[in-house]
Amino acid sequence: MTSTGARRLRASLAAGAVVAALLLEARPGADQPRAILRPAPGTKMPATADSNSPAHWSGDTLYVFNSWNHPSRSEGRDQFSLGAPQSIRFEPPNHAVGNRWIEATWPDADGTLYGWYHNEPKGLCPGSETRTRYGLTAPRIGAVRSRDNGATWEDLGFVLTAPAASLDCQALNGYFAGGHGDFSVMLDAASQWLYLFFGNYAGEVTGQGVAVARMTWADRHAPAGHVWKRHDDGWTEPGIGGRVTPIFPARTAWHARDTDAFWGPSVHWNTYLQRYVMLMNRSCCSPEWPQEGVYISYATDLATPASWSMPVRLHEGGDWYPQVIGLDAGRKETDKLAGQVARFYMHGTSLHEIVFER
Image 1 (cartoon, one colour):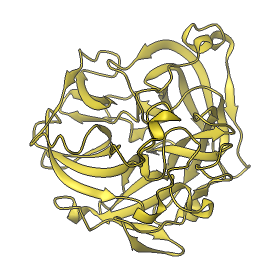
Image 2: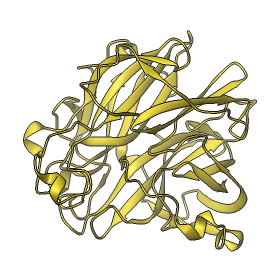
Image 3: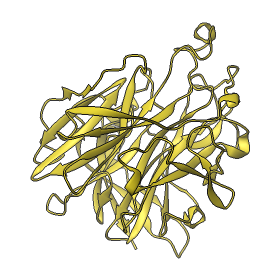
């Protein structure tokens, strides 16, 4: 989850004490690919990464966004040579919205950059500050647009919120009383639909977990009111206040003390596998979002949520915000596009390459 209290990588991993001998493998069914983590020289994002860190290319320059309450942007010739982070600007600032984390971006053919942010409104559960670290909130997801590669952003409004009646100020997970957040996006191959994969922390346990919504790419200029959530067998529920049917339902609800659920999906298209790949956190089974592990799933069709394979564990324990960044600068690989070998990050730190096998 995104919060100022997000933990750093476990000390053993940061110190490299275990990593030198670490070789972890996710073994799905016989008809599914597999992924292996192999140790690699350590590298870190230029700024604190308290969320997914989206990247895009403009010419020969790679831009990467890291967020911790407020986003920063770094640039360089590849992910290993990024310069010092520079704070981005929202125009107008709209301080009433509060802190924002840019968790996903997508460049348009005309050079316009579209982005989506996670926002945590304040004051939703008065008095919760006395029993939780920061007070309970309920995230929501908004859209932004930039014409200067993300140095400044124009806010396009909120596109995904949970039903207002779903707020549970007695939630025991330590951070969220509901809401939608911790997400990534993927445009389909025909550039017709943009899919938003997110964590739903609201409502009944049967509706909580990793969910999906979509909008037509043609609506990217004015997305508010044009995003539709997947519910039951159709894209029938509005992005603002609608219900969801999760791809991967929670086993134990987020308002319980012993939450057991996937969250924080990071999705990319893998050119080697010719499949979409999703990395997720799994939180289990006590308050404060303990990390049980990182899981991986594969799909061939974004429009069919049931096509995602059963998640298998890629990394035991570890830390939040798993994602990949592709290594091939010539092919303009990013967090959204990768080949057989990519860098595997957790919380903005990479100590491994991820290797995919058919």
